[in-house]
Length: 395
Image (cartoon, rainbow, N blue to C red; front, side):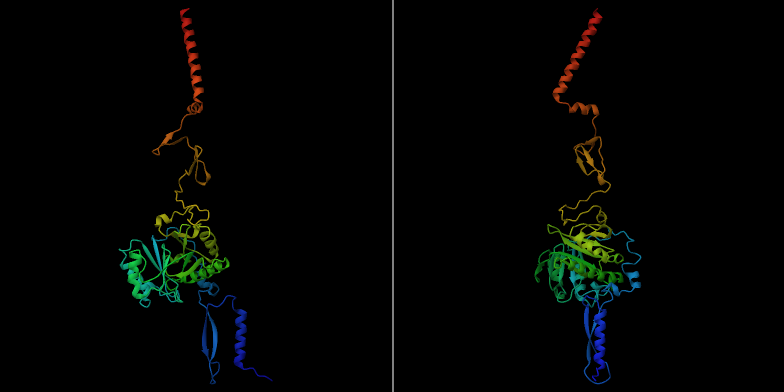
């Protein structure tokens, strides 16, 4: 009779359990650990163990954490989002490691010299940089640490080093010219940055990775890989609005529009792709503001249309209290289809003029020939009446 080695039996059982209970998706990462299953001398057995982050899949988050930090927390949808974005005109993203490695203040960390050097150099040259610039760290790794992405410009520089930070800031951000020590690349497509800075605030640490996972799934299923790029990013302000994300998309003219969203859940991801990126329509209930707009301007989102809308219509800003939209045949069509016809018009200086009376309108509508004829008849009748009156007096 064959006796099976207990170690082999244990491995076989573990393998069966792994195949039965593991998800269909590939593991996030695989780590090898050397273990000794018995005290006997001999080689160690290398066992492959699936290592998953507690925030990489919502199914691993406890109901308590979800209620406190996730999409079901009580503060969701409580605040008015429009106008919660500070005004800025350029966004610089530095690719550097990933959210699991970022300290709470990654731009000020002594152990992360590159983010600190870039952030400090930009602050030091603030008065020399004419374009209001925001700096954010985004996911790097696998040879991309040090890559710099710049919006509005839609350009990328690879491999920024500590010793090159000063020249980069001086050339690109201060003087607006290509970096002499780097090769400029052009970015194409749409870019989505999701705040996943868990060490800064656990709400983004819980919500961010779940949104990134869902975004990548939907992009894959729609065949949009290589057209829409998703990356985790560091603190962008407003952790209480998690999930937070920014979408940078070029319009048909190549102009970049940066729009911020808050309270985004995985259920909202299809709308982000199909409505915002594909059709150019703002999702108003989740919209926080946009690049290049002040907080006051950011609050005016009614009937706003993005420049990359498929129908080619440009964004129109208007006063929601305004009644007049278009003059149509002497009348006007008001907001929401209401009519605002008035008796009168507007002169060259924009002043309201008094409407003509019904009689004068009737007179003006007659042909000039008819008017002259009518005047002649009236004159003749008057002449006859005067002559007859004179005849009666003489008799």
